[in-house]
Image (cartoon, rainbow, N blue to C red; front, side, top):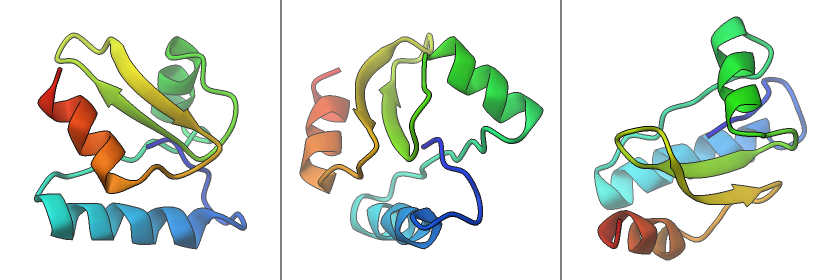
Length: 83
């Protein structure tokens, strides 16, 4: 997930990450585009709107991306299972 800190959606995004981990057992990596590594990640994956949730392959290719909204857990797990 790419998410800026201290925004109107930050709390909702953190809650989504916590709930996703609890429901699926899968950790969600967080990138803040205000950091160097987060900026590089966002630039590399053409992310300019936040929050953005990406499902990546092992080689970092984006399989699916939800921009400006938080997806349903089922949407994400479906992509992960069928990757």
